[in-house]
Length: 455
Image 1 (tube, rainbow, N blue to C red):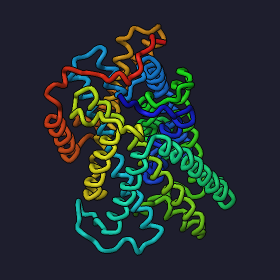
Image 2: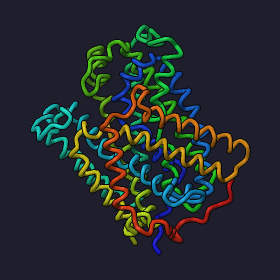
Image 3: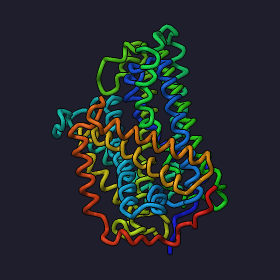
Image 4: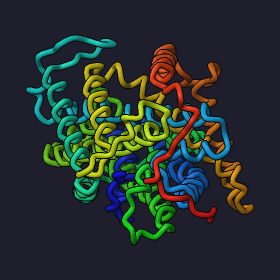
């Protein structure tokens, strides 16, 4: 039986996870971050959030080493919970990764429209009061086709794309930061906190898990690790992604705050940070550089989530949770070709929803990720690890449960609206329709590496 290609090394896993983690979201919400906490409040809020995610990252690093299966959370929960729990866990995680793909496709179109305003023409229709432009749809579909083809060809081509775009993205961000530093002012950093210090930190901490998610995607490609890959490097890739993500947000928070004060970031528009920087510095090339870095980040994130979602779909098909054809491996490319094509088609269809249709769905995706983390932590606790492992698992369950509750409890500000609940109902209904009748009889291919002892 054809197996997935084993090509990935440490930096490949890091580039994949960092690509899933950092897209264009930081640019879109940077104004909100600084208005929530101020420069120092944002730095402290991100630091607290990253430190609280470390136990979850520790759990994932151990689980991937013990169960190197593309099914990820499905495989972890299958050891200790009924099949329906594994299916629900896999289904919500599939949603988390897949829904990011059309969002990033449209984000690329929006960024291109900022750089080339002529693309913001030929309105097709409106959803939620927002226009859907023909050039945006065409560009989103074109990117979807290209990345689908890239992933169909093989993981090595996709990994090479991730490495180069990661290098280019970080280089462009650093150039932007240092260029802005020459024209900014330390006075723009005041006030350090937008509210009382503790409140400022807490307001930023609330959104950190959403912006730093993606480290868990390492496990989705565990079967594609190079034969000489060291098992302990799975943990290293996970923890490295969290710390590099934290360092990245430190850098961009300080860079943006140094150039423009937080009070100037309330101008509205699709990219208020870019608009504020352009007004403050009267230097279009710096803004173009910023938007170019965001465009590269979008392509990275799109590709990273396509890799993760296609592997999850493939693994669920292989376990007979979905149509077994999803578990097909291309004999020459050694890729889950059917799963890749299905993800590409689903992404292309979702592009027509426009930005307004996808934003509430993304809110559901963030909660779905927390549910997957919770299931992984609960599974690790059931594996009876050492005291430190049990403590990390318990902390992870409690923290992720809190993340879910603050979005679904009606009394909490920022809870789900009817649009988010509609997205939940639709995805649950699709899951009920496509779930294979024999999903309780999981048959895992021999291509899956035998699990090691719990480290």
